[in-house]
Length: 315
Length: 315
Image (cartoon, rainbow over all chains, first blue to last red):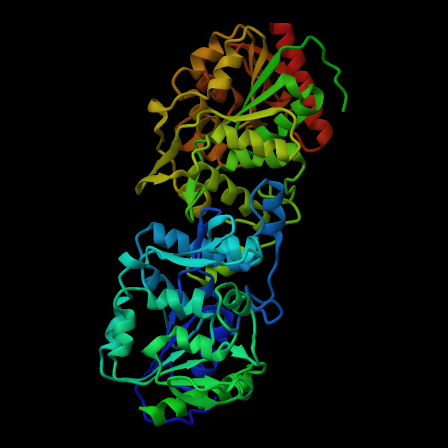
C-alpha cells in the first residue's frame, strides 16, 4: 500500500456492488482509512427466508476485508454450501445462493435489527470485526427497496436480478420508501463538514446502484453543496457494461449504451467524469481518459489514484 | 422391518429428545406408519439468533429419518460447521452449536412461522419431506417454555442445559405459557377416537421432557380417558440415568434416583411400567422387566415390541 496522494480531507465514495467495490478497494489502498467513507446502496436489500440481506453492503464488506470470492464476484471465498443443499430438500427457496459462511452475516444482522440496532451500527460493527479500516455506511437506515417494471408488471429487484437473471425487459424503476427515507446522519455530517476532498461515484450501474442513493431526500443536495468536486467513473467500457445488466437496461430504457448517456443521467451533479479511451465523448463535465477496466489489484489502485488526482485538479 | 404385532389401533408415544427418540424409532420399525403418533415436547424450544429452534422435534425428526448423528446424539450426520465458525467472528452467539445442514431446518421453520403457519403444519410437512412415515406432532402450537430455578434465580432452559451444561443445581422447574396453551388438536382427536391401542411414555427425562407435555391443559385428562393402557419406560437403568441430567436433577429435587421415583412422578397415570432387571421395585402399576438400555437398532425394536406386547396384555 502506498499513500501517494497527500492533501487530506475526506473522500466520499458512492457504491453499488461488484464494480463499485473494485474502485472502493482501490481507494482503500491508496488512502488512509480515516480519509475514506463508502456510502452503500441499500435499494437491492431484501427479505429472504426471514433474513434481511444487503447484497451491496456485503459485497463491499467482503471485498474490503479480502474475503470476497473472485470466481463469482459475490459471496465469500472458501465457502461451503450445506445449508443451501439442505434447504432445498425442506421445500425452502434456493434460488438466491447463500453460502454457509455468508449466511452467518445475514443471521447475525437480522438478529441485531430485530433487537433494535440500526443497519449503520450493525454494518460498522461487522466491518470492524472483519478488520476493515474505512467506514462503510448504508445510504439510509430506513428501508428503500428497488422495484422493476417489466412486461408482467412490477417485481422486486432480486426477483428480477437473481431469480429471473435480468431476463425481463425493464421499462421503469422505482425506489419504494425512498421518499420517506432519512439519509444516514454520519454521511450527511461528513458532507456538511467542509472537509470533503472529493465525492467519487463508483463505476456501478447508475439505475440500480447510484440512483437509489441519490433518491434519498437530502443526499443529492448535500453532495452538490459539499464544496468538493464530484467525479464519476463510467461503468461503460468500449460501449459495453463490464458486468451486469447495465447495457441491457440502457437499451430497454431507450438510452444509447455509452458513457455519455450515463453522465447525462447524473445531470448537473458531475464536475468530472472518468472514461476509458474507447469511450471519449464530449459531456457537460471535465473529462479524464483513463483505463477504467479493473482486472488486477494494481488496476484498482491505479484508477483510484487517477480519480483522486483528477478530483484534486478540479477542486 | 417386521410387523410382528397385530391388533391395530393407534400407539401414541410421548417423547422428549435423545432417549425418547430411541424408543420412537423402535416403535416406528415395528408398527405400520399409520399406527404411530409421536407427541413431542416443545418446552425446550427456544429463540436463538432470531430463529425458533425445537430441539426435541428436531431430534425426533432426524432420528426417524435416519439423519441423526450417532456420535453426538443431537444434530445431523455428515454435518459441516462453516456457519458456526463464522458467526463467532461476527460477535454472534456460538454456545448453541448449529450445523450448516441443521440450520436450514431452523431458518425454514422460522420463516414459515413468520408467514403464519402453525408448528404442527410445519413439522408435518418437514417430516413428510424427510420421508418419515409416522406422524410427529408438537404437544401444542402455542408457546411453552421450560424455565429452571437454580441458585442464581430463574433461567431459560437452554441456558441451563447447553450454555451452563446443567451445572446449576435445579430447585424448581416452570413451564411458562403451559397454563394458557391449547393441546395440539390432532393429538386430542386421536386420544378421543376410541381407537388408541396404547399410550407409551418414552424413557425421557420426566421433569423436562414428559411433564411439560402433561402440563398442557387437557392432555393428561385426554390420556387418562382414552381407554387404552398407559405404559411408561423408565429412563433409569441400574440407578443411573442413561443420558443427560435426569439423575442429577432427581438428587437436586430431593428424590431418590430410582425407576420407582420416576413412576411416582407420573402418579396414577400409569397402567404399566417397564424397568430394567436392575431396577425392579414395587410401584403402583403393573411391572414389566425388560432390557431398557438401547444401544443397537435391534435393542430399540426389541424394547418397542416388549412395550407393545405388555400394553396389549394390560388393555
